[in-house]
Length: 151
Image (tube, rainbow, N blue to C red):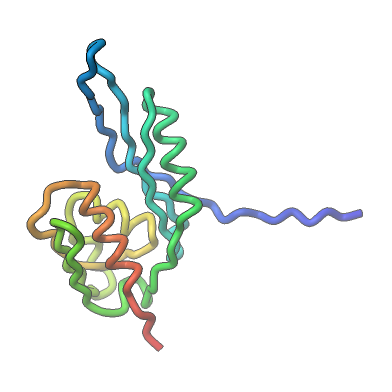
């Protein structure tokens, strides 16, 4: 009776942002934490999650659980992205361009962490207008989702 053990691919978890949120109530302040987490296998799969809780560890745990459930597949071409893409999401505008091998990730903010976890090694890009890291994260996710694979 040999039992088959399905090995889950090793997922890397990266905490991108932790925010302390305070809400005024008649009894005083109500404080919670929100955590933004990226989960990926470095082979083209990526998920992001936003979790909220009264403590930081449960918020991170909720975010990881959400990210694992809602993973997308990123189209890769060698070690970069297949084509240039420009996306506008809410206030954020993201521009990603493929780069030659050995260039590295020439992007800022949360984009570098997201692309690393997704498995993209060489890309050049820019985040325009928004400084909101949560909005930027979703903009990058939308851009990576809309990439079309090269044949």
